[in-house]
Image 1 (tube, helix red, strand yellow):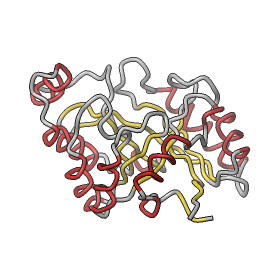
Image 2: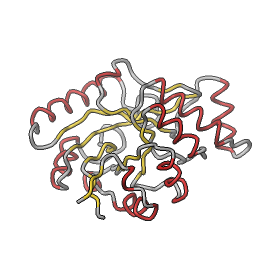
Image 3: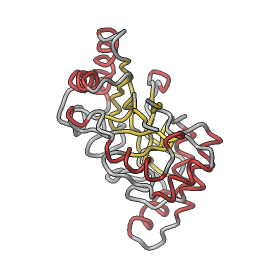
Image 4: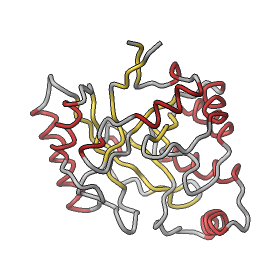
Amino acid sequence: MDYTVFADYHTHTYYSHGKGSPRENVEAALDRRLERICVSEHGPGHFSFGVRGKKLEKLNAELLDLRREFAGRIDVLCGLELNVMGFGRSDCPKGRDAYDIIIIGYHKSVPPFNKTALGVWGESLLGIKNDPHKNAEAILAAAESCRANIISHPGLYLKVDVPYMAMCCRQLGILMEVNSARVTMTKKELIAVKQAGCGLVIGSDAHTPGRVGDFELASRAVTEAGVWDAVVNARPV
């Protein structure tokens, strides 16, 4: 059975470190015949690429204008890709309910704000004491605190206990992303996510309009693992 992905919830623009505009992402999604497109820039805590203050307000206003302009043709969603700032902490701005989609993930260039965070993240990144279970707990606690919808690229930069994360995500109603810029979960891990009853979501993680809706790598991984029926933004064709 063949499947088609109808929504891209993970895209970036020149507001952070992408190269296109929100409008160009929307137009690219239309060209790809997607039904929904979300611009989900990095949250304000990212040292290099975080969108904050007046810039974030401008982005949100632009997305609302595009939503009205393209109504009836494609759903334009306002999102953020938050950063894990420490054990159970994120850079979620005030007004969480203004966002349709909240993604959260571990990224580099994000300073920890407490000793616990420094212990978990610093040692893990240096390979001194990498504890996948504790790493998963830290990310899950942050995801729960900001009411995240999606955990982006699980396992990128930091090893996590994927089966445990999947079990907890199912309980919390959080999806785990199959990132199509670089697939971060193995075939065995993807199968474990499905077996845990956790939903998967495919995201392009596009940084140019040309990559919006490019799901090739993720689709290949999902096909090899036989887990298409766990992907919430796909349907049979």
